[in-house]
Image (tube, rainbow, N blue to C red; front, top):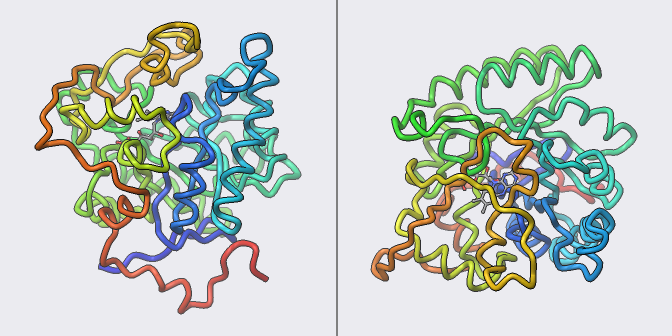
Length: 345
Ligand SMILES: Cc1cc2nc3c(=O)[nH]c(=O)nc-3n(C[C@H](O)[C@H](O)[C@H](O)COP(=O)(O)O)c2cc1C
């Protein structure tokens, strides 16, 4: 099966893989840059992004702002022409500031979930930065696209569908996760909603499916359903280029349910990690910095870790993850069609 490059307006990802944003400190400039360099879409998470800055304790707002620029520049150095964006959760207290700072830094795209990004088009007025809301149901797709249409006379540049197997805080109950609910119909329903707005705005709005995408079959399944891309997060955690602490990566490798079992959920309630805390490295895995604002807090990282070395995935590199997901798939179609990469006239 041949897949087309992922085209987001004038941006072209030769390989239709969006790397899911992962906070705190899991997907920063290094991972995003490496993914963009491989022809995917590299995404930096803005959640407490400034935690390594000296003044983070005293002035986290400023530290986060500074780090948004720094991490973007780091990613850009790694991939001068690739697609680099930010994942900015609506639930963040400084959501608006993060969006504006990311756009000012030069972000190609902003992916926003953990709430509906109702005012994103307003914040991005005057910037070239593209907008990709995260939705999980036909209902949420309808609500956000209708709202943007009526209130902002705007529509999405890309839609990310996060299913029950995506880590995060998507509103699925534990029962729904455990019942392995059939999500394919929902995906197709969302694609139908998106088509209405493609027609109305006379533009292509690629749909990207996320959650538990860990091998070629899952990629193929998403494309068979009508997606133009997949978003992958957990698979990138153990790579050399991932920004996470090495201990965290090691721990991730030792998790029995690395392959996204639906029962690998747990509530996330911890606060911003404190560097003086002796469990600092463990706490960094918690990416929600505003737990009180979020109703459902699940992550697909399993807290029970059993060591079984035979079953451990290899660390590898970003390039190897791409190979495992899309090897043998022809991506040069864009080149044949004369599509141009960003920064090329
Ligand atoms: C460690 C980790 C951190 C994450 N952090 C964020 C985040 O900051 N914001 C967000 O919207 N989603 C976050 N997610 C969700 C991912 O971006 C992604 O949509 C989802 O994990 C995709 O499923 P997969 O991990 O099975 O590939 C996180 C996921 C993981 C595993």
